[in-house]
Every structure is written in structure tokens, then in C-alpha cells.
Length: 324
Ligand code: AHG
Ligand code: MN
Ligand code: MN
Image (tube, rainbow, N blue to C red; front, side, top):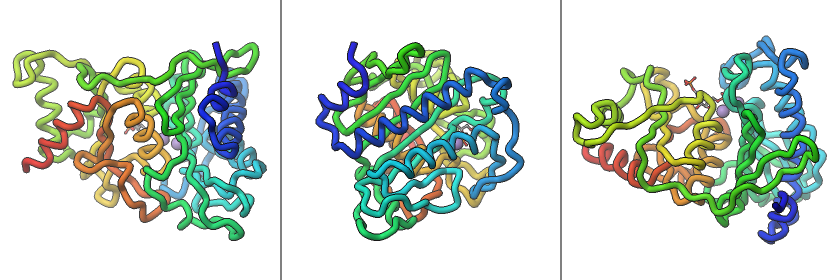
């Protein structure tokens, strides 16, 4: 089977995009190795500080962030990076072609319990060569992404990427350290019987989202006339990977739990890169009504409600929200 380098060459990937993805995979291998050693590598537990979003950082959030920041800053194609864990964008080579955004460690609450976590990345063009990159340079719509992807550190380490021409999946060979292609042109079915949502937030949701989930839990006895199954990994990377493998719908919807936050997930580091993958696999991704990739960002750390996956389900959620 072919490996990542062969795939990137066959896609005629821009040299900058191919090189940045290669750099990210090298860091992914380091993170994967650290996770395999777990407590023995002293990577579990709290870092003892908060990030810019007021979230407690785990040791591995900081380690993964620093590894990515160092590796990408020394890649000549990289004009700057923005991370969930950093207050502001960090400029790199001002003559670089691309900007890189990442959630270095997604699913932080899973680190200490030996469950799946991941890394999410998004690559944008750099349009301000000759000047050091600032936060404003990153404020581009999701449709501008040149590529996006994630690495999932699960029972094996797998990566899904898109360069805007479908979604390909790779598995890390632990012996040769090569990412070997396992799937091409991944497709998500338009219908599903599986949904992913943190139902403990039910009382904070808007009525259309409550109605949607009520219809699922009513199963055969309700208007949907069939039973549904629920899964929640607590790491978006895990839930998206499952949807790419066997379909489904995922939501972290608008809620009133934290009135200052319209949703939990971050537009630039989570929603946009995952939405590009989902759309490239034939799925749909919205904030319940509007297409995520069309959202004009106003801040690098902004949050957004997310409803994505099986097309017919995401359309139905949109209809329920538009009816009220
Ligand atoms: P992160 O660890 O990068 O902060 O992201 C966690 C996110 C997302 O991956 C996951 O879907 C969601 O938070 C889980 O939230 P709950 O703990 O509220 O279920
Ligand atoms: Mn995350
Ligand atoms: Mn994170």
C-alpha cells in the first residue's frame, strides 16, 4: 500500500502544504510515542496553569503545543501558527506561504484515563508576505483552507486528511514510522442510526435541539419510527473518526450553560478543519442553520455551535431550527 508521501505527490499538493503536513506527522509520531508510555513518560496530570480560554491545561496540552510550535516555526513554508493553547498568533517566517492552526491535544479529559485523544490542524494561505503574521491574517473563512486533518491516538494511530479533493485515511506503522494509506475517497452515508451529543447539557439546549434528541430517544415509538444508538468519545477527533468510518451525526450545539460562549467548540481549531473533512466526505456541517465553512471569523479563539455528519440528519436539524 502507498504511504503519505506517495499520496501527497499524486494529489499534486503544493510543496508548502505537503511539507507542512509532513512536519505535523513527525510531531504526531512523537506525541503517539509519549502517549504509549503514558505515566512512565510523566505526561499525565495538570500543568498547573490556564490557557487563554480559561481552561485548565494538562501537561500534555502544553507538551504537544510546544512540539508543534517548535517544529512548524522552523519550517520555512510556515508564516505563522495559531493554537488553542496560545493567547495570540505566533509569527514564523514572514516569507512563508501558509499559516497553520491547531488544537494540539483534543480530548484533554481523556489523557489521564488512557482513552482516545488527537491533534487537529488547518492550513490557510498567507496573504501578507514580507510582514510578520498577526491574528488578523488568520481571520479567513473555512472555505479558504488549503488542507485540514487530524491524527487520532487510539488503539492505533490514524490520520485523516483532505487537500480539497476527497478524504484519505492513513495508519501509522509503528515499525517503519510511515503513515500507510488505508482508505481513499471516504464517504459518509446521508442517513444514520447513530448520534453523538453530550446529553447532560439537555436542559441548556434550545427547544429545536431538545425536540430532535427527544425524537431519537423515543426511537420506534416516536415519529422517527426506528431506534437510534448513542456514542460520545469526549474527544471530537474520536467522534469524527467514527463518523468517517461508519457514519453518524455529531453535535455540540448552542447552549445557555455559559452565556458568554455560543458553543463549546472552537471555529478555527476544531469546527473549520473538521467541517472541511466532513464536506469532502459528502457530509454536511452547520452551526444548526448556517454552513460552518462560510462563517466570517472575528477572533482566532471564537466558539461556534456545531452540527455535522450525515447529510439528511443535518438538513433535518436545520429545518427544525428554521421552523421556530
Ligand atoms: P479540548 O480537549 O481540545 O479542549 O476539546 C474537547 C472538546 C471536544 O473534543 C469534545 O467533543 C468536547 O470538548 C467534549 O466536551 P464535554 O466534556 O463537555 O463532553
Ligand atoms: Mn479540542
Ligand atoms: Mn485541545
